[in-house]
Image 1: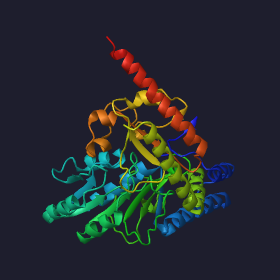
Image 2 (image 1 turned 45 degrees about the vertical axis):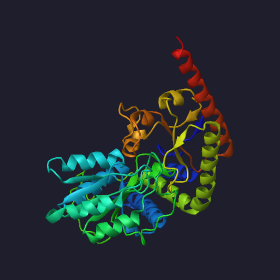
Image 3 (image 1 turned 45 degrees about the horizontal axis):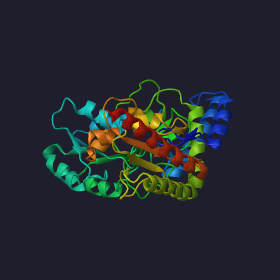
Image 4 (image 1 turned 90 degrees about the vertical axis):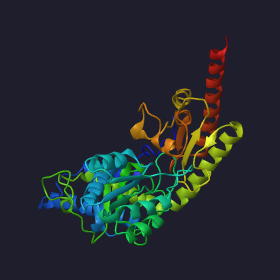
Length: 385
């Protein structure tokens, strides 16, 4: 199996695996005061510092969660409780879009969904209009993802923050696909809330975090009520092994990020160039704007994506977001970019990462070209009278 689905989940980094196994070999509740509990708390504190170092923020600004979905829920519900309009974009992950729709459904006009252009870039002029159009209600929150999970297209988040803060809005970003792949400095990028998941950058599944900027006052209600863990944001016994694995993956990503980004970008470009040369009618979505290093969203006109994937069983790729895989509707991201339903249904996402090799790319090219040829041959035979 050639694994090219890092946007769904990245392979567990060896450093994270070692850390998880070491933590599982110990015992102790991080809320307990005895030696075993203090040992667990020490491990959690170290992981919190490791993640804070990756983000360049204070360890006290990190809230551990079960993943980005929970972090998004916490962020949106807390910020929206301030009162006012919630503004987001048409290409957000369902973990933002569906939460936004749920919490605003009883207040008509309380949700504004911004359009994007053909490359998937947010229309900042529309953001200005939304901020101005909120009137006396004001804007409670602007939530814009830092990197798209299907196309890899990046957002100029600083530009969003500038206009949103000027209007008095809190700004949240779902940075799930960005963190650990490209540098982020929360000392310079003054976003208020940021969500992430460990398994996107080589940590274990089922653990993530929410960054809450120091001094940000939100009338939040925790999703889980019970103990006072994580400064009251999230009750429940801490997932020590998962958190420790997240910290180890964050540290490894921080130390290796530059070299990995350069190498993975080169591999992505090689894969794109070879596929474009041998399949000249294919289309790379978002090719003309900044993207994540290893993400390729490629449309094969007239060929169903599920058929392409089935015809190359040795390649692990996706026909869109992993969280929407198998859904009967086409990609909302591609539709928002102006693609037709047929084009959206003919699009495959390849996402490369830290363990991808030159050989993987070479074999993937041959597998894709072979799959396309096979499907076209079958379709041609079926079309014969």
